[in-house]
Length: 509
Image (cartoon, rainbow, N blue to C red; front, side):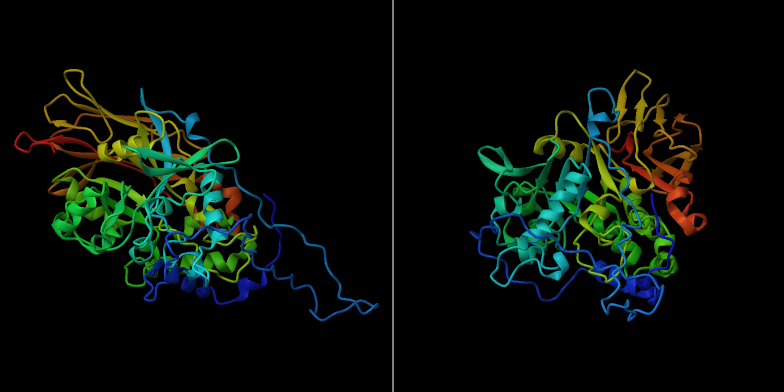
């Protein structure tokens, strides 16, 4: 990684300016949505022009109005980017998985040109056609990060007038995946032969995903039993975003399929409890400029565990099955006038899409049905990719009669069960810790933890047993610059969905 040893001019701005911009993105509820384009609107022909990165500020090495003797401005050579690109995600085909399964990496909770507050708040042009350049940046980001699937969740007032192929962002060269002759997903080809499977959904009062047909628009804002039934009738899985806003008993009334257990919004929400803790770190990131972390690692300063959402999830896990996932909530709508040092905006689709992801354990190749089955089975673990790549991770349970349970599976508790955990491969110099939590109606409790590469535990009784992997990312120190000591912290790296061992009187669902 190369750096320029200078303090950029934007670093002398009030560091809180960045926080204000990020907060604007966090509060993604605009009151005046744009009118959607007509259903038959076609994207413009030809390759789109991308947003140009902000101009770099020159170094403070003399008066800005100085001119050479010939009267012409002295144009200093561009020193190039302060930061060079970090390695890409490895293809998931190279990652280990339990026998008979494959790992798929993907994003849940995404917005683009059919959300009124995406693309710098102007996702549609005056003639009603989408901002194709913004859309192409999103597609390129998915390919760069080697995501296998993306569950789109555009806002109701923009997506409700779409046909399903439009909501799937189908473009020439894409391939629609059909079920009973009707489209349910869109496969986007990448230049390297990889492909990304997109499904359609919406974030309103609820967050239904994986539509098989477009639901009644009124149901996109309806948490009533009838509304949820209508969404499921459209083929949707019914998720809830921003779970930090709800407690367990409230969410229990909605009969959800999934809880969002982490969303960066919770770290930046002006009405939330975490912002006061995060703001000083944001100020340090801005103030350090090019002497601070690589911009792809700014997440190390912004991230805080979603304790409120986790508490709601744990309350639910003690009583019923519930998928937990991380929501990216990316809009690319904070056009801050800062030089990140790599020529790319700080909240680009590529950058935020690389900070964390959801891993699914599939029974076969990536497809609409395989993704849906893995979500319903609870075979998902969240990886905070910014802290390091995860490979070799496995959670399973073995019963006294030789039964084997994978993540998301359930069985009756009897003495003799064992839970086995393989920690991910440790990055050089990093410390990896396994934590096993038992979730009961008394709350969560850590029942085992170790820095050994494996853990074996005999459960003392019923509960939902979920694993967290914690990491001290010392391997990132060379890329953290002057803030290495501040931001290299021992913190969570992986959240795994539980294995359920039910009491005899509580039938599994």
